[in-house]
Amino acid sequence: MALTRYRPALIAGFLAIPLATAHTQVFTVGEKSATADIATDFTPTHVPLPQGKLTERGRRELIRNLEAEQGFAHRALPVSAGITLQANGQLTPGPAEYRKLIYQKGQSAAPGDRVVVTALEFKGDRIILDFNGGPYAKHRFLRHIQINDAPVTPNTGEVATGSRITLVFEGGIPEISSPEVKALLEPLIDFGVKTSEQAYADTLPPALKDAIAAHEVLVGMNHRMVLAALGAPENKMREQQSGDPNGARYEEWIYGHVPQTIRFVRFVGDRVTMVEIAALGKPIEIHNTNEMGDFDPTPTREVAMGDKDQKGAEDKPAAPPSLRLPGEAAPADGPGKVQFPTKSSAAPIPPTPTADPGTGSDPGANPGVGSATNPGTNPGPNSGTSPRSNPKPPMQ
Image 1: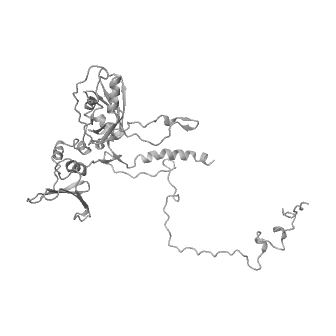
Image 2 (image 1 turned 180 degrees about the vertical axis):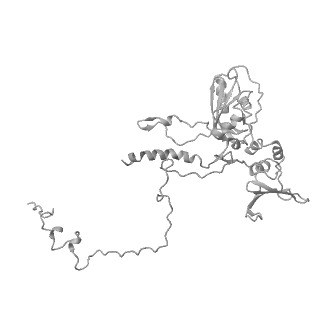
């Protein structure tokens, strides 16, 4: 009855909630700012392809030589099956759609990350390659099927984080070898034998790539760049005071030992702030200014107000959700008002009543207390109304 009585007010309140939250201030990251640092440069390959069609023996050789093969991503790969690469041709989707795909589906691998071929499938004129498990979770359809209230495949909560690349050949798949497939995937995946630091260095601008190849450390590099240039340090000094009045600390990596040239690389956070080079018989060379130019290795995202008024109008605070009808005024003494204490003195606390009535009190005032003058209020042991007044005789 209560829900039927207040049903119109409840419906009006729930309809008013979206209207009230429509002007709520939220922080959003735009697509352009989130994908601004994703490189989409592409250069088609020129790999000579054989003329014959793929045989069963060639298919088995491709599976044997490509499955579990490891490589390094040349560009960011999305968690999607929408990447199509024409053999010695263009890549689909284009740069703008490629960034949008990463923004919507998420990123499976960053440039320089190691990827593994986990599955191959041959269909007509294309080879479908899954990397890092592919973009779909295993048995994703069987999780929704039950037999006698028992699921066919338990739902383990596994989330797909891989990517899929479809390599398309004009006129059908030729009798191709695994090195030729790797050469065709070169714009996206590098299957060369190299470390992760070398693969990461190949994704950097030419100036930084040349500096890393020459084993030079520039002020402004991050930890990963220094590892690619000089490798792991021989000694580390951590948690040292930098002299900053704000209490910032630095970490120093030391390369080399006497009589060799010694390099002291100082990090504040993830950035190189100072490089000291001490060569034998020469004065100490100090670099403490930015040498990276306009390149910033720190990934940044632009955060903007999602509902900012383009006309520059001032934002008004939104009204809280309510079950009142639109335009209905709140009562003056209704809930939500802060009650401040008054300055008047509080009333004295009354004494606690005693459980035992005093002498001369009327026993009839407390019907729970028995009295000899009123035996009907508390039946005695010989009363006819007691269930134990007439016990059964013992058995003979």
